Image 1: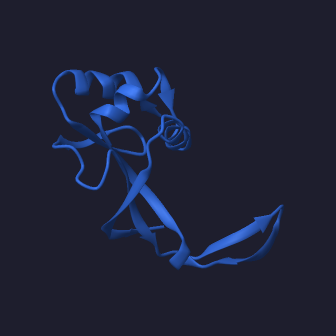
Image 2: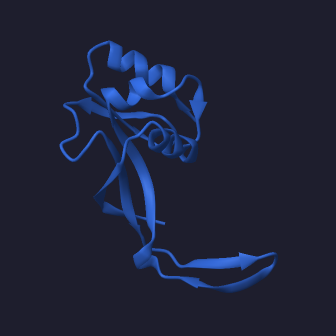
Length: 113
């Protein structure tokens, strides 16, 4: 879970952005992201991905069209616009969009499953 009050405390302490993984663990901090106020940090998916309904495999998904989210980078204006409490990665993505910010995507060189 991502603790939004913790992110806000970092911003209030003078950080211009916070960078954290999908569990909310801080990865780095520093200057505001150049690409935008809200960045999704993603990696390519390398494992096979199947569509399953019940116990049946219905097909495969094209790995080239998928991303694995590894983290987030949020500028101070985004963090200040978020509510309080904790959020799942999905809830965070929706909250940032609802606050009026557009996500930008940055790919890492690592690959993920």
